[in-house]
Length: 146
Image (cartoon, rainbow, N blue to C red; front, side, top):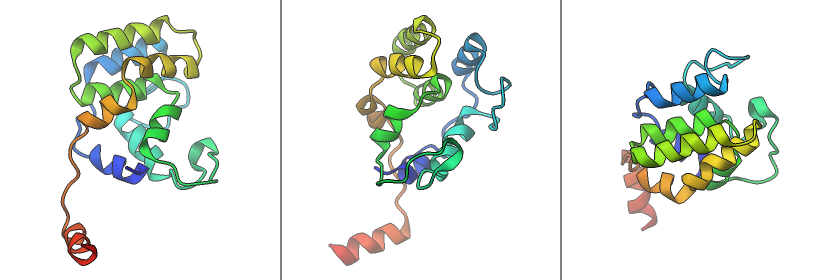
């Protein structure tokens, strides 16, 4: 799955999940803190993924194409990661563990993101994502290429 495919799977997820807001508040990071350009963590995701083929807002390297697993493993914003797990309706007990892991981690974004991913590695997220939409163009492509 590439970053744009991941972005399309986020379309119908609820942007207003309650627990990621509590994490933003506890960390004092995200919507309403600092210079956040986004109004929700969903918007953070979709905006970030839309620009993933280039340097985007974070000056990413454009050396080679990246897949969604690479994207997941390099995000440093714990509320962004938490929103996705929460919006995917992953088990509350695991969300509790992830919340505690982030709050107890060293106060650096990379450490907090890593703590979250120890509870929710990419395969757990990928398995919970909504299935891709079947488009007419995609159906023709499958027919044409066999």
